[in-house]
Length: 456
Image 1: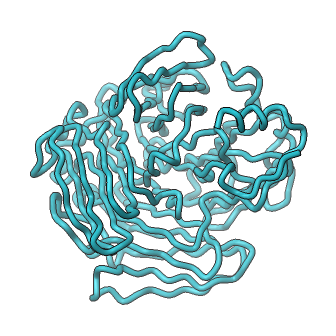
Image 2: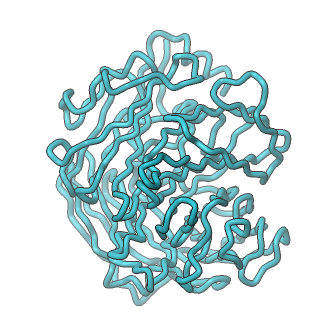
């Protein structure tokens, strides 16, 4: 990768194939158990088709009592699938138990998918499904360790959940903290069939009892969801909010990241976002904002919390790391697993706005391409003047934190963001200080070196 990185920087012409954000024709997902007393519903799948019409099927391969759901899409169409009537068979509710709750979404052409806990009680977040990028056999689990799980909601815990994509999958879990039914740092194994799931739940609601640094391996591809239910930290205000995302395996992470700050506030004063850096190799050196000396050195499974008070944070590392970002509006929080910017990105991303609440695009692009964005072909929504240099990145990267009105991106409609000259990354923060936060990244997590890249 180092040699390719230098080639990418100094090569004047780069041509790439159709690298769309997290598109695919097969998506596996396991839904977290969200506390019903804080409102765990409605729940939705937001599905957007690409340039081709398609047929989409939603099934539970391990649940014979679930009748598959079928939908037809025209090209570039978004449909919201209300899964609330099936919530008792979709949420994975019993810790330390094998269940039949895994979802498999398939399509006859490329689509984008995300899962949304809309929650009339403001306990909401989105989970960006990552298609093939979510599947692997080796994972570490990052987790936030600042917010506790509110003790007035009996189901609210920190968790990760596993779904198997093939029969007779052996999964080995080494928890970093005590799980329900299992001791910290003691490996145990389970066997899952296709569509079966396992719910690993922290035994404690304390932030110090969360599961960052846990390791999961398998002999066949699996997908993993992480979630923290009803997050609470009184120093940040009285909110209780869900935060979660779908994971990627260790071969989909990288060594260069940019984090764009959100809008956490208390009493009108800005609050720091929290960033979690998790190493998968011993003696991993972490550099912040272009520093030439390491700010931290981490061993495999060790995690470092970094407070983000500036508009952005630039991270490089001597070996690949996971980076998890918690941000939000007011004291309402959301969580996203960040894509590495190193040899990754999309030439187009399709997003859907869930609500009319505040909606921000977080955009990252190499310097020189900030004038080349289009939204549904229009060049007036994302402008050059919206961008500034990322501090510490040597002038190579530009960022924008752009508030978008409903006149530009309407609720429920598909919006295609493209860049004419470069790959880019895009995140979305949607919500408000009294309505919950939905946060996710819609970039391609795969290295472009594995795709059809031609350079001269």
